[in-house]
Amino acid sequence: MKKVAVITVNYNGEKDTLEFLESLKKLETTGLEIKTIVVDNGSSDNGTQETLKAYPGIDLLQTGSNTGFTGGYNRGLEYAQAWDADYYFIINNDTLIDSPNLLSELIKTLDSDLQIGLVSPKIYFAPGFEFHKENYKKGDLGKVIWYGGGEFDWDNIISKHWGIDEVDSGQFSKLQQVNFVSGCCLLIKKEVLQKVGTFDETFYAYFEDNDLSQRITRAGFKKYYNGTVSIFHKVSQTSGIGSPITDYYVTRNRLIFGFRYARLRTKFALLRQAFGFLLTGRPAQRQGVIDFLLDNRGPSPQFQQDSPRPFYPVKLSLAIVNYNTADLTQKMLQSIYKKTSGIQDQLTEVVLLDNGHIDPCDKLVKNFPEVKYLQNEENTGFTKGYNRAMRYCRGEYILMLNSDMEVRDNCLSEITKAADNFEGKAVLGGRLYFPDGSSQDSVYHFPTIWGVIKEYFLNIKGAFFMYVPKPEAVTEVEGIVGACMLIPRKIIDRIGFLDENIVSYFEDHEYCRRLARNNIPVYFIPSAKFIHHHGASFKQLGTQSLEIHRKSSIYYYGKLYYILLYFTLLFVQKITGKRPPGSMEPSATKTTLFQKFNNLIRNLNPK
Image (tube, rainbow, N blue to C red):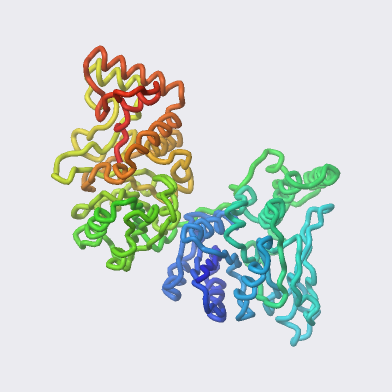
C-alpha cells in the first residue's frame, strides 16, 4: 500500500485549517495509507487545541515559533520522511479540495514516468477571494483560475501563472510539462527529496518554491501540471496582499534567488532595481534590499512576534532504538507503561525503531498498541537510528533511551518536572544503576589531557572522565551519558540532531560539546532513576565495535589531539601503573598506534 503524507502548516488560521481538514474528507483514498500532518507554526491563538479536538486522528506538530513557510513545511517533511512516506502532498491550509480523485490522479502522473519528480493540479480562486470580483458573473465564481500551469520568467525573475483571472472553460484542463510549480499545492515523490533535500530555510517565505523547483530541474527531474483535477485557494490569507511582510520577503528573496541562479545581465538589472528601492521604495522594500546586502537570511526580527508558550500535543516523547535486544526492549516497554513510572497517558508517546531485522520487535509491539513503530531495512548506526526516531517525535521534550534501559518509579514524571522547571532551556540526564542496584557512572567531564593530569597526578577522582556528582543533587555538568538524554525540542531546533558523521560512540560527547559552545547548560537529575544493562546492544557488534569506536574517537578528538592523548595515557600507565577506567590491555597481535590508543580508552564512552 502506497504511503501518502498530507502536510499543511497553520499559523493563527484555525478557521481555514478546520475548513481544509473538513474538505479532505472528499478525497478518494482507496489503496492508499494516508497520514495527515498539521504543523502549527507557533500560533499565538488557542486554535491548535481546538483543531486537535475536532480532528483527533491528525498528527499535530509544533515548531514553537513562526518558522515561515520553509521551516513549517520542513518540519512536516522531516516527520513524514521518518514515517517513510512514498509521496508528500504539500498543500496550504487556506485551500479546499475540489476533485475527489485529486490524489489518485496526481500519483498516476508521477508514476507514469520515473523522471517526473513533482506535479501540481489546477488551482481556482476560492469563491469570494478573486482579485477582481466585480469582473465576474455570479455563476463564474469558483471557476476563476489562479494557477493553470506556469513558467518562470528569467529576465524579470518572476513566476507566471497561466490563466490567472480567466474563467475556466476547459482551456487549462490538460496534462503537460512545466518549468514552474506553485508551492501552494504539489505532490512530490520520495526519491526527489532524497536527492535534492527539502525547502531552503534561507528564504523563510516566497521564492522557496522557485528554489526547490530549480534544484529539482538540475537534479534531472521533470515538473508537471495536471489540469484534470483541482483545488480552491483563499489567496494570501496568511501574509496579506501588498502587506509590509510581503514587500520585505518578496524583495529580499527575489534578490537572493536571482543572484543564485540568474545570468549575469539579469543580476545587473536586479542591482539597478534594488538601488531604486533604496531611494524610492516602500520601507519594507528598502529593508529587504538592505538585508540582502548585509547577507541577512531566514526570518527577519522586525516581522517576528513573540507568542505565548505554544501548545504541544505531547509533553514527553521517548525515542528508543533496538538493535538485537528485543528481550531487553520488552522489559523496557513494560517498565515504561507501568502506572508507577510517571507516564502521562495522552501526554507521553513512545517511538520505537528497529535498526535492521536482527531480533526485531515487530511481534512484541503488538502487546503495546500505543507504541509508534518504525523499521530500518538495515542497521544504520546509533546516530542515524536515533535521529530518525527523534524526527518522528511530537513532544515538547524528547528523551533518548537505549533499548537496554528500564525506568524506575516516578522516573518519567521526575525528569519531565525538571524539564519544566528549566523551561526547556537545558538538556537533562538521569541517575543510572546496574541491574543489581549498584551505582553506575551517569555523567562525565570532557576527556582532556588536563583531566588526565588532575585524575592521576593530582588525585582528583572523576576529573578525567565518568563519575556521579557528590552530593547527589541537581547539578550542572559538562556531559551526560547518551543512554539517557532529555533534549527539549526547541534546543534541537536551535543546534540540530546528533552528528551523523559519528556512527556511534562519542555522539553524546559531540552533542554536549555543541551545547557548551552555544551556552546551553546540561544538568544531572538524580531523582529520575534508570536501570541500565550496560553495553547490551554494542556487544552484538563484536569486533566491529572496536573499529567503529576508533573512527568515532578520531573524528571527535581530531588526529593530533588523539595522538597526544594516547601518549599521555600511555605515560600515566607506565609511570603510575594505573590503567584508565574501562581500558583494555593492548592486543598481543600487532596493532597500529591508533588501535593501541583505542584499546586504552575504548570503554570510556559506555552505552
